[in-house]
Length: 174
Image (cartoon, rainbow, N blue to C red; front, side, top):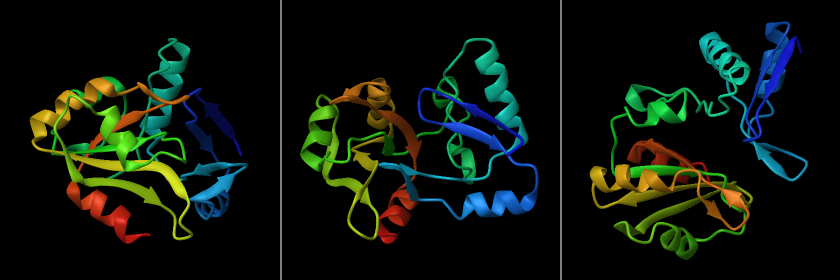
């Protein structure tokens, strides 16, 4: 490891000395570190530099999602406002015990499509701490982003606009 950068949000950037180390690290995707589920993915150099600059400036709002196609990739919370929204939001940071009724209560006041709340689980049935929630309209999903950084129990939620396709892929991995 050549360098690392950690955030209180649980996110980290790690710079490796060579490509072999990168490949070894990528094999640890979706495994546990202690009792926490960890997602490992490549990111761009500019994401790392942006995070270093934000940390130096005291702006700890850097949240980089895994790279994906289309307009849905946000580098920071501020950029979430500029994204094109669909009816679906991705939740990250859920307590492992969270269930669909708790998620619906979390979004009370917003028009959630009840049959379209999906808590993501690993193939062994254990929760990953993520969920996908579909709202009646894209405008409603955008309004529900007001709940970003609010808590369910002791855990604060991170919300991201996403697509039905990403939610479908998450369901199919179980």
